[in-house]
Amino acid sequence: MKVIIIGGFLGSGKTTTLRNLGKHLIDKGHKIAIIVNEVGEVGVDGETISSSGLVTKELTSGCICCSLKVSMEFTLQTIIEDYEPDVVIIEPTGIAFPLQIKEHIELMDLGEVSFSPVVSIVDASRFGVEWEQIPKFIENQIKESEIVCINKIDLVDRETIASSTQKVLEINPDAIVVEFSAKNADEKFERFMDLLTGESEIHQEREDLNSMEVSGVGTYAGEYSIQAEDIHPDKVTTMLVNLLMDIKDKVKQLNPDFIGHIKFSFKFKEGLIKGSLTSSEGEPVIEILDEFGDGEEHLKFLSAVTKVPKEELVDIVDGSIQETLEKEGVSFEKISSEVHDEPNIITLEL
Image (cartoon, rainbow, N blue to C red; front, side, top):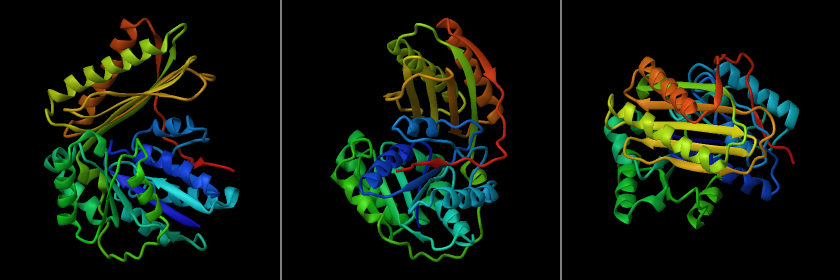
């Protein structure tokens, strides 16, 4: 069984990369399992991935390189016993250290396991701001990686791409640097997927770091049940854009240069729409995903931003959500977040 670990800071494009990689591996005849780790108690990315036709659950309520080591081992053992995949892809939370996850897996009694090169994804459009906000954390993620992906090259000029690549190589001269747009799945992205067929040979001894403490990121996740009868997708799109802009303006008052990831998934009778924002200088990005709107209607969210205390982030996010839903005439009820004792997995079966 081969293990692929794809890390990167919040909002760098890990989920988009994983979705396209998963489809690619299935097309090649692989049977795969995917584990997604969200730092909050309510996951958003699992639902996003499931919109591609993948059955999803999430490993939440912590970081798998810190507080969820036991859950991670149980999850992997369950996957092997129940699904017998030949490839397992792990998407850690954006404030995890990917190499630590690999090292923990190497100590587990899982049978024959090989590793693709450890990957970290960098958002070319935010790399300079990330370096200003959380240099120690970004430096450690890049140093631990064998492949560093400069993502979102479609959003920046060639000079920005070159400077990002140069900075990565200054931090980790041994890294393989790949520049691509995961969203567009371009030729360079194909090259990246080919590189993942190799096996990792890194052996590095060091003291484990608590990635959540090093990152300095405040986080808050949750879910609202909603009743959105006769609401049009265009209205949902506008509502999510306004909601993200409102949160952005309020967070900027506490940290004018924040980076991170604020994301929502709005599931209603017409389907599933995702909205996200990754920095104080960014604009909301909306995705209309291919999923039927059957099942319970809800609004899920995850917010994780630099240098904003959690208690203030909670007030901002809940306040903005409730004000927006009331204004749009959407009935809602806050669902209390619960810590999941049983680890969850994302699986693909052929």
